[in-house]
Image (cartoon, rainbow, N blue to C red; front, side, top):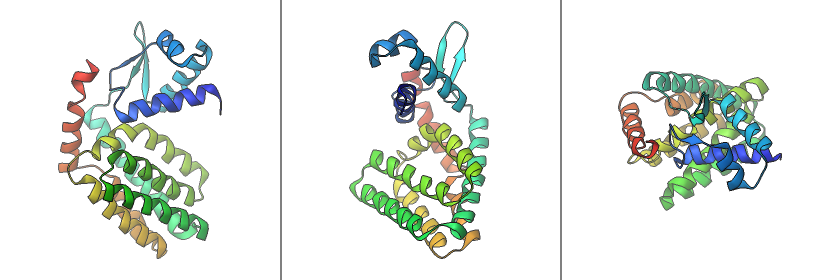
Length: 219
């Protein structure tokens, strides 16, 4: 893996974890010193993050962690729900036995994290769970689009898991997805994933409340 890709993943993880909150400035000189690299891979990493929509390049401020308004965020989750529903429908029809086994392994890892009350562990197992479904769709273009938007929404999906009882609810929703895919029921798999991903009503209110708690850190 190139140095710039390693840097991108490191910064992306800091954004997803909330260590770098919306509005935070990413100074090139500081990143060069922190990671002990030249400016070239730092700039490449920032360009990659800007392409993903995780940061914005602003005149005189440089790179800034992107902030998304409530309306835009709701729209993005709606699109994510449809992309995941499509992945689920195709995966139910196309997944190989090996891929179904990987999905089950990811599901069991989520169960272990839930039982341990490990929110961070669940977050990473959840990434693995959804990645297995994207791959199992056997549609390369759809896979790429789902991964890109998933990355863009990772910080907000992580915040959701800190809402009371969300981890348990998420796991139950995963259970419905797994059962549908294992049964080869494409429509049920699609609907289960759409329900799982789309954020609306109380869930959207909870997410907005969680985001507002980051504001002091971003100031």
